Length: 221
Picture: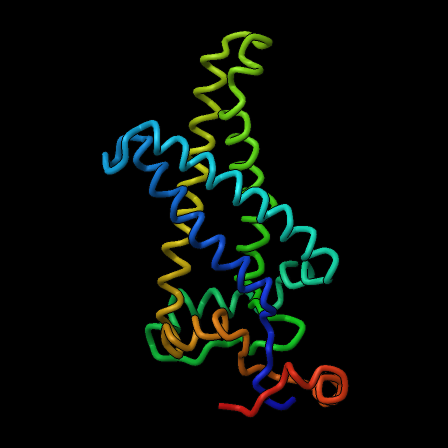
């Protein structure tokens, strides 16, 4: 295995990532306002901004899902048990002792086992929960007359939506915190801006990239 500086995050993946960041921040800000945590926006504009941001994010997620499956990138998010305990131990204990991260990023596996498991849970459980409850909340007037005790239903839907939102907020906080450990915040964030990261390549992968996709390689920094 040789360490090379490789473009591992294509343009769309970076756009998808930062688009999500911006839209989720808008949704958290407006959502907290709608729940009475702050009064920085009037209720009407907050509802409108929250709804528009949610619909744009839903559209982005749909397109990103299509991209993940057509490019085969979805395989990056399949969790593996192997190495998960070592990574969990590092984050819980080893990072405070100055230990090196036990996972070495490779070409076809950008995410460590704990990251992959976290993203898998978000994409298959938390995100669908917030989509379905949000759409149900938004279309309340369309279905309220066809169910018994609609007030009970909307209360349950609202609380599930809020719970999913808090899970996402917790993920954002932990995600930002973990960017500060190891080699530092800048080294973690830079690849998602430039697309390039230093990873391990097998001789076969290195030869393939040099022959077929030389633009994805650049001199190591």
